[in-house]
Image (tube, rainbow, N blue to C red; front, side, top):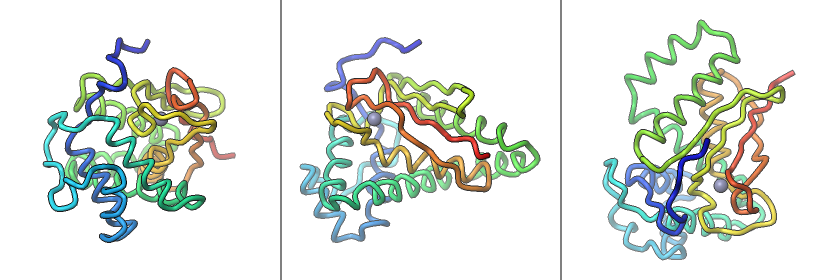
Length: 209
Ligand SMILES: [Zn+2]
């Protein structure tokens, strides 16, 4: 069951996660591209100084959404793929931050069946995102089609409207997480998006045949 939330305009976002997103954008787009999209998103204050690497809720979530939108608009049709690459990079930064824990988990995972590995990483991802922000509300379910990762408080599309799912960065992060845990690529599809009026963004990890 979803928790009660404040209106999305008031949602707050964790400094360290914004920092990882900005580092990932720099990695994929280069410094010059990063500067352009930060300015475009009204976030010029991060050009010279990244958000601190701490767990304070120092960012307004709509700023994170606007940053995603700025990258998408910068690239046009290629935006989707670029944002997925950026999402993959953010997951790798996350692994570096929690190096020891992830190293131990990674070794243990190698002995487990694929399905268990995928379930482990999705559950772990949901848990750590909810730990750093009291308001974040994520559920992981197993369905006949595959695992579904449901975020009722998705920041990528916060206060945005669209006629198609737009949380490409999130698709990238989940794809990279699953690849890390399972040792191979799985298809991740966003099957519902808050920007289209859904109550949550839902990501299906498609079972391989
Ligand atoms: Zn979303």
